[in-house]
Amino acid sequence: MVNEYIMYCDESEAKGRYYSNFYGGALVRSKDLKLATSFLKQKKSELNLYGEIKWSKVTSIYCGKYIKLMNSFFDLIEKDMIKVRMMFTQNIYEASNLTPYHREHEYFLLYYQFVKNSFGWRYSNETSQPIGLRIYFDKLPNTREKAEQFKSFIRGLSKNPEFIKSRIFIRDDAIAEVTSHDHVILQCLDVVLGAIHFRLNDKHKEISIETGIRAKRTIAKEALYKHINKRICFMHPNFNIGLTTGRNDNLKNAWCHSYRHRLFVPKDKKIDLGKAKNKGKKKQKNPASAMSFDVAHVERETSQ
Image 1: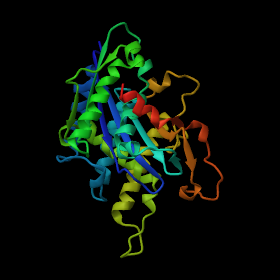
Image 2 (image 1 turned 60 degrees about the vertical axis):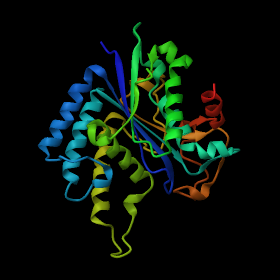
Image 3 (image 1 turned 30 degrees about the vertical axis):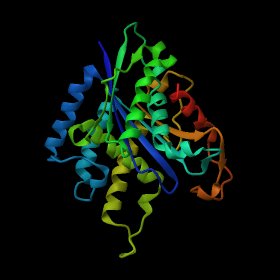
Image 4 (image 1 turned 60 degrees about the horizontal axis):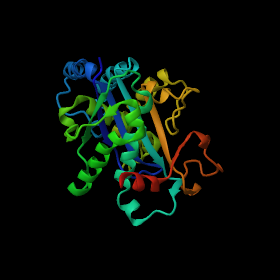
């Protein structure tokens, strides 16, 4: 019986050329944690990858090994032993009427939304038994005061109506900052998150100023991204990495899907097409699939 969900959370670069504010989460049920962790550690050992796995470490020499490790990671995702979620913003959408508080706490306000909404918690527990949620954040890059305030807001989700209805609770000691070096699932998440950030911001097109051609590392990262995208498309044919993943007319797929993306769009916004990839287009291909949210709501909710 599942009595706890373990959620690993990571974030990537705050600002990108076209897309920004990248957050990623990998969730595993307590009954699967040992098997999933052992499986990935064993694969790392077979590949002689004894150090920490990170997107920033991808090179032409290690690309093949990273591809094999990602195969193992996505094997677990396809079996639904691990669920993965990505959330990001698109630079063409600029939030309007932001207060100084919103701007100062943007990182944590968005992170809060990611934890609260990205996994479809309302559909996650069809039993009559309560399920605990344990959350491991990769080291939070901010002041201790802000980080502790953020974690207190996350603990407060236990009082959220959706969490209460779904019998999902978060104990006071169930939230921690960890070092990714000690958690192989978090390491694999970092690679996938980095790959999505890399491709959405067209980093695969970067040319070396010195040589006038793409660097070997850039080419290797593109090859790894393409393989990751191939594994995603096996689960979601014709997957568009820059849009919110559709639910196929089934709201429960917010939870049931083992892999999903979410494009976060402020409800109160202005559009700057000068920041779009294809500036000649008047609008995004499918704006209706983007998830909207009133950022002011976070401040009201977390202050209760």
